[in-house]
Structure formats: C-alpha cells, structure tokens
Image (cartoon, rainbow, N blue to C red; front, side, top):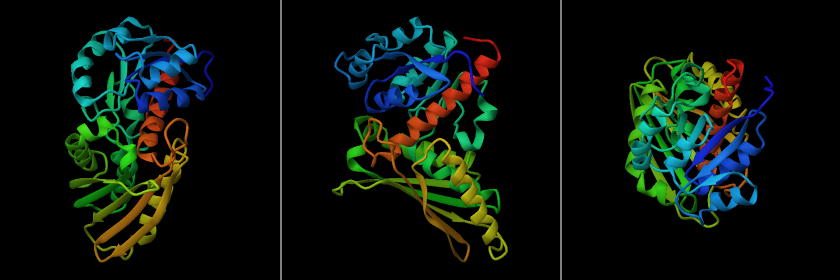
Length: 296
C-alpha cells in the first residue's frame, strides 16, 4: 500500500538507537523524520539530524509536544519515559516506547501489532523479547508450553549506558512478555553481556518445556518456527535460525541470531537493530492507518 504523503515521526533520545532510527526511517516509503529531540547539543543523533537538515530540539519532551509529528519513537530510558508519557498522551501523540517502562501494551510486530494499532502508547518489550518471543509463540501455537526460558547473549560493546541501567527492567519485562505474548505459562529471561573480541553477533537461545507427547508434533513445530522466522525477516533481514528445533524428551531448544543492517550501529549489534527495525515497522503501520483515515 503506497501513500501519497509520508507521515512525520519524531524521535526523542538521540543516542545510538535514535541515530540508527534516522537512517532506517530515511529508507521508508511511508514515514519521514519530522524532528529529533534531546537535551545535549552534541548528541550523535542531534548532530546527524542537523547535517541532514532535519529539525532538532534541545527541549526534550517539550520539543516533542510543540512539534506537529503525530508519531513519536521514544529511545530514552524507562524512568524518562514514565515521566514523559502522560505529556505525550495529553497531546494526542502515538508513542512507540523502546524502553522497558512497559506502560502500554507490549507489541511484537509478528505476533500482535494489528490488534494494537489504535493504542496511543505501545511498548516494544526488549531486544531479547523481539529476538526470542516469536519462537516461543511459534512453539506454543502447536503444543502447550508450561515453562520457557530464554538466554540472550549480546556483545558487551553493543550494551550502552541505557541498556546497563535497565538490566533489571529488561529481565522482568521480557519474562512477563514470554507469558503474555509467547504463550508460555511461566517465563524466565537471562541476559549475558559477552566481552569477546571480535564482538559476537547477538544470539538468543530459547528453551521450552512442553506438555504432552512431542513425537507427533515435531514436524509441526519445525514448520511453525520456520514460518515465524520468515515472517520476522520481512522487517529484520538479518534474523536467522542458527539452530532449528532440537527435541529432548519434553524440551524443545532453538537458537536464533540477529545480524544488524550496519546503518549506524555495527553489524554485531543485532540486539539494537531488531528494536529499531521493529519500531519502524510499527510506525509504518501507524502511518498507513492514518493515511487511510485521512489524518496527517
């Protein structure tokens, strides 16, 4: 579906993630960067926006409220988002929250985007959630999953201050989403920051303990995981099935990896790339709906 006029999107949080978003949105057929907002004039995203003649604001949330862009992507932190969210809601902005604040419905595009397009604030879970939970969902669509555990391993260099400050929120938010979005009855999430040199590509290992007999479900699980992977690759081309489903009595193990597009972030930072790619996918669906309804 092509639209006649690209919908402007404001970015708040002009760090690594915000900067990568600028590059990704530039390639979109449906949205454009309307504003980059922060509080530090030497932020990477602010400098890039100025170079590209994109409007900037150093007023933070106030700059977003004053701007006409109807869609906001928040790449700040959980605490900052919690403070700013009521202001964005009052001004009628549709907010895509990349922090672990989780004030709005948790969304993973391949699982539940279509049913949340009318929400004013949606949460993109976590990078580990975007990587792993679609696999949990693929398995739970075939067989009951009483327990699922995911271990996300990312390069230490790809974990900036925001990620490190939000580790507790990361594990808690991901674990809850394994249950609410993945379909597991109980979920657990673990994150590992690997200091190896050269940096490793982001990976997630998914373990699911299933209920019932696996013998007649193996082919269905393999097909479901393969289909979910292909769907996810439509907006994250670097998403790969590293180890297809392995079966051991009542346990299913799957490993995936994400190689970044290399727009701004290094290719090993797939954990960040999947977040920005998912956010752009959501913003584009918002824009399509707005255009169809005749809104700016």
